[in-house]
Figure 1 (cartoon, rainbow, N blue to C red):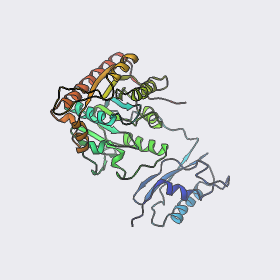
Figure 2: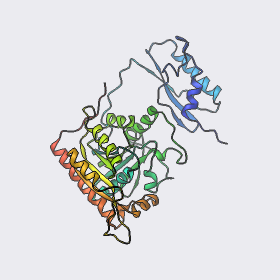
Figure 3: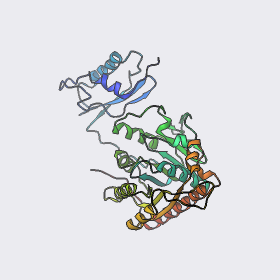
Figure 4: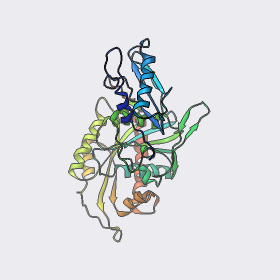
Length: 369
């Protein structure tokens, strides 16, 4: 059976290495940077020292290499792959990671199960249908669904060498949308068991080490709720505006209100482009003019009015939306009432973005002190 490496195994091996200056192991001492990368049997990471003149740097690197080979196996490629960092080194301020992108739109929801990813995917495809250059980042680290919704679950992702010498991830492209997801990089049948820092690093890699090129809209399918992933995104990117997805249910509306509050807080301060009410009513395929308000009526509309934000759209609950997601053919590509609803949503999002850009100053990345 082929040996599989994972970060916890690396950390367990490194916990056997002690720093001579204190006698404590390097993992609990915080000397192992949260940047472990695994490519087959090749492992790389960084060790952090308090100062660049630390006398134990070389010996500790050798000890870390030996621990991994001893506790995991001689076939692990670790020699020469351990970088050294110092806490006194001031981190360089990153430049704009997406210089060719005009608008960055976050699609969020206060809770799971409201169809946020369905909205994000169909919005991205609809904008492409309208002639815009569009990218979609599936940032839902622990529940990536975009690969299935685009019919690209088993598609490989490649690195490409650029003219400036950099190796960048090539986004996949389908239906006119450039797409990346953590789902392309992990086993689709296994849960992603990562600490928050590792998830954030993986997400940053998909943003800063990918060739997104020139885009009119960069859509981010955010995880549900509020988490450190959201903080990573607003610290990494200057998000133009956010869209909050809800259903008409009271429980969903309460969480949507929290989501709006997160973006509007003084520290984050990302403009709200509007609210999308999903599953607004059920329409039977055989009776397209009938509406059944299964989850309540106009909850998202009333919330938008109460919070003084725009209602961007009300999307009906029809079987073709679910089937389109399962089959990898977004419903907006179909000539249907639902498809028309998403095209109209895309037009309203484009208009709301233009209004935001004409009336508000550019968003800045969040700096948490």
